[in-house]
Image 1 (tube, helix red, strand yellow):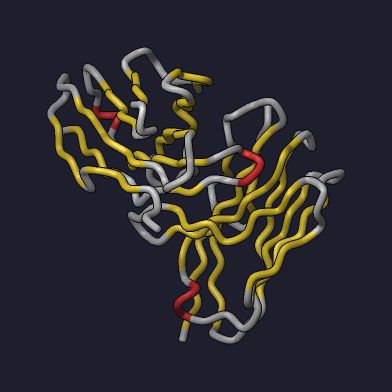
Image 2 (tube, rainbow over the protein chains, first blue to last red):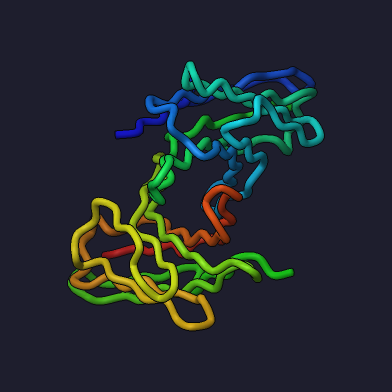
Length: 112
Length: 112
C-alpha cells in the first residue's frame, strides 16, 4: 500500500529565504507526482506535475525534483514571499490504480 | 476556460440526514474523482467515475455513493450522516491520470 510522508509538518521562515519541502513515498511504481498548494479552507491548486520519467520541473520560483528509485521528491521555493504562506501537499498517482495518495502536507509561514 | 466547479460551497446538516454535493469537471475532462479531507490531513480518495460508472472506490462505507451524468458532471451522496463526516469534500477531474488532476474549491460539510 502506497504511503506518502511529508517533512516537516510545519515551517516558518523569514521573507527572502530559499526553502525545501520534502516528500517521500513507499512504492516507486507511479505514473507521476504532483505538488499542490492549499490556502486555509480552500481547494487545491496544482503547482507542478512530474512524470515518472522526468527528474524535475520548474515554474517561476518553484522547482520540483523526483527520484523515483529512492521514493523522494523535493519542492524548492526560491526567494520566499509572504504570499507563499499556505499548506503544500504532494500526491502520487500509482500505476494501474486511480487512488491518488496524498501526504498530510507542510504548513508554510513566510514572515515579512 | 472554467476549471472544476463545486456546489454548494458550505453546507450544514443534522446527524442522520442525507446530502448531495455537485461537481462540474474542467472542460475537456471526462473523469471525476471525489476526496474527503479532514482538518489537518491530506485528502482521502472516496471514488472515481468514468463513462458514468464507478471505476474505483476507496475505503469508504456504502453510505457514500455517487453518480456521473452524460455531460461528465458528478454528484456525491452521503446517507445517514455522522458527525465524523464533517470535512472538506473535494472534486478532481482529469482526462487521464498521467496528465494529473485539477481540483475544485471544495464543499465544506458540517454535521451537527
